[in-house]
Length: 282
Image (cartoon, rainbow, N blue to C red; front, side):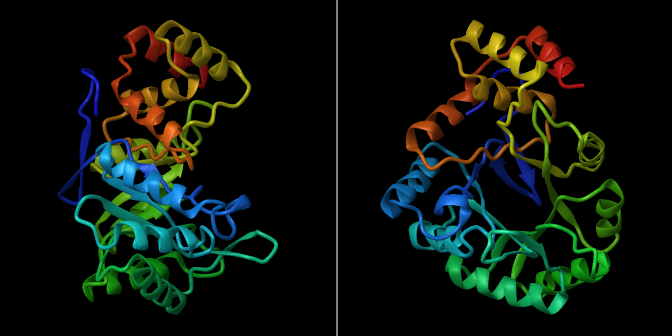
C-alpha cells in the first residue's frame, strides 16, 4: 500500500502499521445493533483486510454491542498480523442511543470484557470513546493509565476530544492516537489534528469517506472522474496526503468495497488536486 507522495506507514507507540486501517463498526446488524446478516461474510471481510496488508483494525465495545469485538476475536484471535484497537466509555441503549459512561470502575469492567471478547491477554490499543461530562476527564484517563500499568492495555488513545483534553491526558499518560471526526466535508477537528502533528500522535479520522453535498463533494467527483476512481477513493487519498499522522479507517461490510478502499492508497493525486480538495472544504 502507498503512493509515491507519502509514507504508507506510521509508528503507533513504536509499532509500525500501514496508514490505511479498517473500521469494523459495520460488521454488525442494522443500525450497529445485533449480529450481521451474514457472519461468514463479515469474517471474510476481516480476513481479506489482513490479506491486503491492513494491520490496524478499529472497533468498540458498543458496536453491536459486543458483536464487532466478538467477531474479531473469533476470526483473528490474538493475532500478531494486526493491531486491534477498541474503545470503551460509550453505551448503547435499547433504543439505539449512544450514552456516555466514563466512570473509572465501569471502564475497568469494560476493558476486562473487551479482553474476553477479543480473546486477548492485552488490548493493543484502547481508546476512551467519548468524554463523559458527568465524570472528571482526568479520573477516566487515570484509570486507563492504571490498567496500562497492570498490563491489560498496551497503548492508550482518545476519541472525540478537544485540544485541551488531549493536553490534559498527556499529563497523565502517553497518548498514541486520537480518533475524531474529520473528512472532506467536516474539518472541525483541524486544531486537534495540528496538535497531533506537533506531538507525533496518530490521528484516526472517523467518518473518513463522508462527502456531504457541498463544494467538497463536487470537487471530489471531478477529481475522481479524472483519475478513473470513485469520490470515496479520492477522499481517502486526500486524507493520506493531508497529514503524515493521518490514519483513515474506512469501514464496510463488503469485500469488494474493502478492496476499493485499499486501492485508494495507490491513487496518485496531483498537488493541484490536493489544493482544490483542501480549499473546497475550508
